[in-house]
Length: 348
Image 1 (cartoon, rainbow, N blue to C red):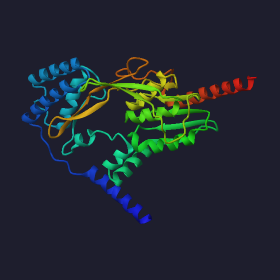
Image 2: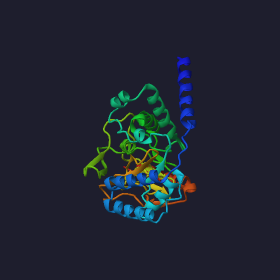
Image 3: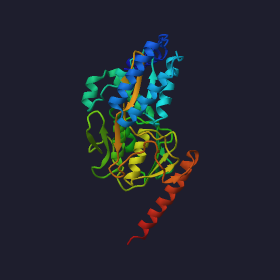
Image 4: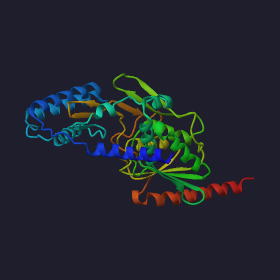
């Protein structure tokens, strides 16, 4: 068994090394490539971007700058992608909307694949090695599970990995934290991830089925309601014990989703600084042999607020510099637990 594990570990290292150091083709962007790519970008924006009126504005700006020759001297793909993104953001600074240059990589096929709906489907579609890598990656994103004293739990997440690989890790973490009297969730360095993982984790903090964000899809025109999960891998934390969430400018996307939704449900107090401000789920579209675009084609709509955190970020309930937010949270949690204990002691 030890020999098998060693072989697997070596294979993982070699796979990562090959991907990181795989030779990339030298690509010089000529006029024909640039024109075809911008044409494809404009078409995909008009077909898929979540706000059609903004997509038409993007097209007008890109076409005007094309006519002015603003892109003619840009032969480097990375510089061109950066410039196009900046020009689009001049109209709407949608944090998830980007043009990317990836020479020699088929990122659209990998990133754009529809996620598996169930654990059984995921296991059927992936190899043993892929599942092992996904679970290891998910486990690394659950940075810290521990206690800040005997009664206060602490959970630090650097992202929300895909829901299926991370489900067991979330379950183990919540089993470890279940007997604490209050919990601090640290998302100050959380870069985002899978909205389904957000719904999964929120499920531990409610006592009954709860409606979360609705997702409106531009491509279909349909709105799908997101709900908490009935079956969980670990113990529920429940809907009564205090939860404090730490955020800051580096809290992004799915990290913001968790903080915003828990705040709207009045299930947590958010402490820190205003977050990144990206709320629109996106898909990946090929716009050339070496270019692709991240285009938000969906919109999260919270049933309580009627909107989301796009462009504004999550506004904390208690403002604090990110570096001092944990200290503020520990002090607040101590006072809340003391007050709760006093009320219990005074009860007849």
